[in-house]
Image (cartoon, rainbow, N blue to C red; front, side, top):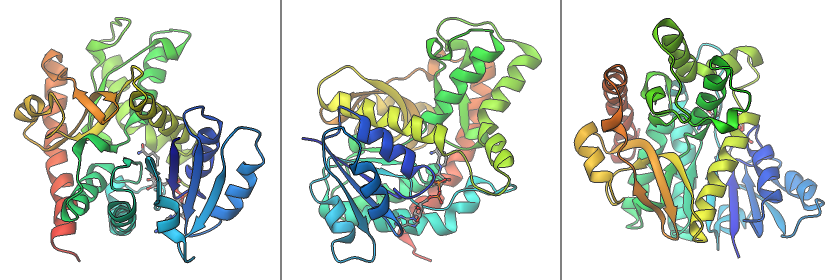
Length: 328
Ligand code: NAI
């Protein structure tokens, strides 16, 4: 029996993500947590004729976070504020850092063995925050903590198919590594399957679109938020990959992980010199069982992109670590 929790379930991402999880054969029970409206979303979803109960929990209620998290196998976290036009993901840090910290404190207490999937931005910093909180409670397991970067992979596949006139974007796979914001997002177009040849200005434009694709949505929504539906789809793909692995089925996806403690991770850490990096991960019953070192296969152009990404990540990571070490 798999109990899935969505923290931030009443939001733009939370609602469609909860819907998709309600439809998933890999989820048997759903707990929806938020500061507002989660009982309403739960009541709505509970009328869908798929198996498994759905229950809503409000932060202010007695059952609250404890009730939602107790017995959880997987917790997906899209809680927090999204971007408005002109904002970077880092601008969200002030508010979202505390929100993520609070939810992780609950997980450390009530569901220390759960797989934790962090969607709340800035992912480059919120994942280190989560790790530091879990370390404080002596329950940190790098194999079970993931920053969700799947939307970058989904965008890369879609945009690359578009540029290459490939009809079905699902048949395209572009490995995307690094982090989840602007120049820390590094698509390795040279390792795309099937092989594509995109060069010069077309390549530069494509890379830029993958790195800053989120801005297109923020701009189009004109103040009403950032990507929600495509993010719910991406978050769902990632959650299912983790749950498939947990069941012993073959599953891989890119994720932003702490490189120590995951097989193959220390080799990657030697190359990148930072603790956290998004790389292709293979999932198993314990979570991340292997991190694939594809960085050495990147071409010269991509090695330059990697350098810029690593520089950006250094600051993002230490900002998250400092937040827990020296609370504001
Ligand atoms: P939203 O504002 O529509 O929803 C956020 C939800 O979180 C709201 O229902 C709110 O009540 C809830 N919330 C706020 N504080 C909470 C707390 N302390 N405990 C529980 N719930 C709380 O925002 P949206 O569009 O759903 O985005 C959520 C987050 O996901 C943002 O930080 C956004 O930047 C991020 N995001 C991440 C992406 C990724 O690729 N990883 C892509 C798109 C967005």
